[in-house]
Length: 418
Image 1 (cartoon, rainbow, N blue to C red):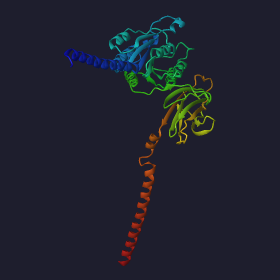
Image 2: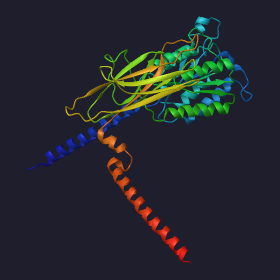
Image 3: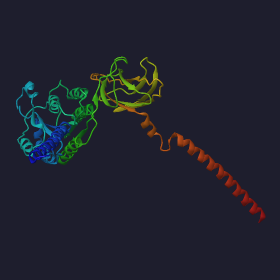
Image 4: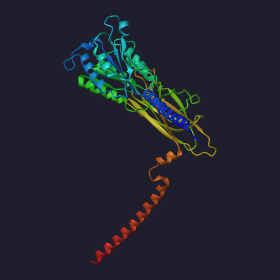
């Protein structure tokens, strides 16, 4: 017989279990949301040249502050945003000290709009333009998490701290395969600054925008921050081998690597009987290259026999070149797994004086499709029903011919009679 005490104890235990069951998933969900949250680091030039009054009749610094205030108000809740400065703190002439002048004004994380606006309001044009060092630190600001990562650089001049070339810094960041994009905005740019900022953006698949009005600055930064919140597929970093025997095994997914000009990169895919391999590769020209180029993708056996290939070539100016292939593995009696090696080769040649390291950005897409999925890809009638449809069309055509011939003879007979 169940007593009141036992009933109360059971109810309490059940309530505790339900409460625990609800609390744990909620905490786990919060952690997962934080881990996958998109991150943006706004890098603002606060060097002495930002005093120039050539944007809507006010200083570049004033225009940037007003634009930032509007951007902070419009930032989506899910975006973790930070602000980093360059040239904001050291007013002196010592180059070594000036080129270290970059600081986190507001750390990347959940946005406190009031605090961030107050921090921006205190800025005053001060020192040097250490773009390269600022980009390196901004990349560190964005470390951790699985969401998209974006640096938005706003500057009114070229880097003043070479030989740490900011374009090479951007390439090094891209070579790490962390899926980080750098977008650049040039305030009242000249040709030299435009070239440098374009190079920085292109190295990571970002964009460059020329800005001469405050409204343009506000609108563009807003677009880039909102774009960070869009769902993206972040490629996995993989390092291809120099030969098939040492190639890393890849499964269905998106991968990123770097390949020197004229170099070979090898990857391996294991196929079960009845599966089909669909793969494509893109190689980006993130620096000045000579005309006449190509990319080759080959699927070969472990013994070096070519199965199938895809290739593409061109001449002139290009940003990226791509090719792909498909290979269906037949149903084998022994049911053995087949190792297929993928070889990627490019024939880009760097222009004179252009660095070849790190290699060109390479993006590999691998899709392994099961036999049932392959059947679904056939046109809606399917192969079997396609033959049936062909037979019906032939029969209809035959009967139509007979009827048309009979009608023609009948019309001729009537005409002769009349």
